Image (tube, rainbow, N blue to C red; front, side, top):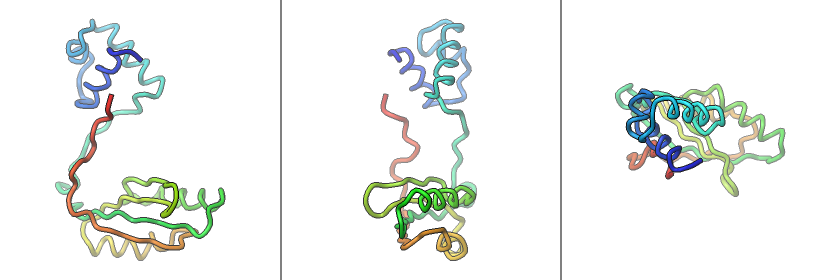
Length: 150
């Protein structure tokens, strides 16, 4: 990956809806070489996809919590079962496995506190192999969806 590829990535991170023509102009390439580079970045997995960024609050999703999960056991089967159980819960918008304790950090978004409480009681507390769940509420999103440093 050279400097031109990095410019392409920076432009696409800022605006994934750029046409190849606009992108080529911004990075100083002609259309064909720019298109080839974008396809190569996609095929190599550097560019994983394109999506719209949505406003949670505009969609009525105004409650955000970080849930820390500690598992009873850390063997492969227990970890796999826990991770598989997270996938069908759409309110978990990000899940990270951590070193040390706790074992996982889950970012959960819901309409409001009662919706979070119901999710917590009905689904989160019943996740397999959970020893302890600890939640903290998000007061304010200071940095979000930041572009990767290139």
